[in-house]
Image 1 (tube, rainbow, N blue to C red):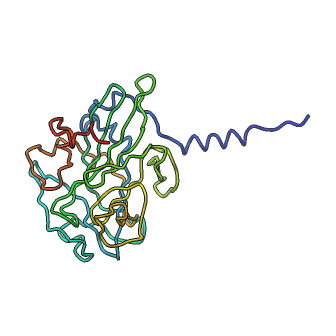
Image 2: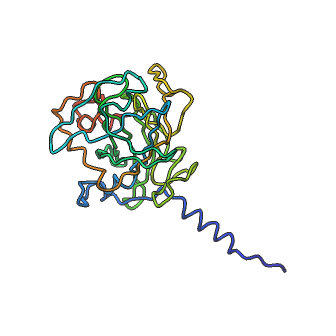
Image 3: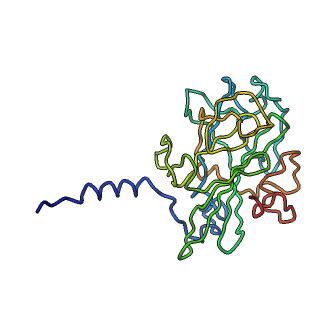
Length: 276
C-alpha cells in the first residue's frame, strides 16, 4: 500500500491561516481605555490603510488636523477642480517617488457607538481644508462589527463615505485587505483585518478600488472620481485619536458629516447608527 505524507497539506493550511485573518476581538476593547482613549484598541483593530492619488501629476489636498490645542482649524479656498490648485492651502502629502510612496502622517478621528446588542460601529474620519466644491471637508468610513460567541466580535462590513452618503460592502468583498504586519504591498487579498481604501482626488469620496480613467472632477457621477495609490498611510496608535476632540458647537459649513454629528442622536440624518 502506498502512503502519502500530509505534511505538504498541513503546510499549505498553515500558510493560509497565517495570511487570512478578520480576527475576532473581545467586546471589552470597545469601551476600555488603553491610554489613547476609550475604545482605541477596537479602533486600531480595523483602522484602514489610506491611499491618495495625483491626477494629471497634481499634488492633492491632503488631510490634516481639524483642531490644535482645542482650537478649530481653519479651511482654505476651494480648488474648483483645477489641477494646479488641488493642494493649495493644504498639508503636504510627502515626497512622491512613484506609486506607494509613504505619505506624511495625519490624524484619524474615531468614534464608537453600540447600535444594538449585536452591533458596534466604529467611524474613521479625516479632515481636509477644502475640496473641489467647498471650503472645509470631512470624509470617512464606518466599520460595522457583529457579535459572535463568548463576547467575540468580527468585522461584518464597511461603509465608505461618499458625499454624505455611504456605499456598503461586506467585509469579505472588499477588494484589498491587509493584516498590517508588513503585508501593505499585497493586493487582491480578502477578509484580512484592515481595508485598503482610496480617497478621491477632487471631492474626497472613499472607495475600495482604484480608478484612473478620468482625471477631472465629475460631481454628477461620484463613482468616476480619480483615485490611486501614489501615497499611502496605515495610521499608528498616535494618529488614531478620539473624535471627542471635535466640539459639537464648531461649524464646518457643508462638511456636516463629522465626528460630532455622527454621535448626535438628535441629528438623525448624520447619526452613525442610522447610516446605511
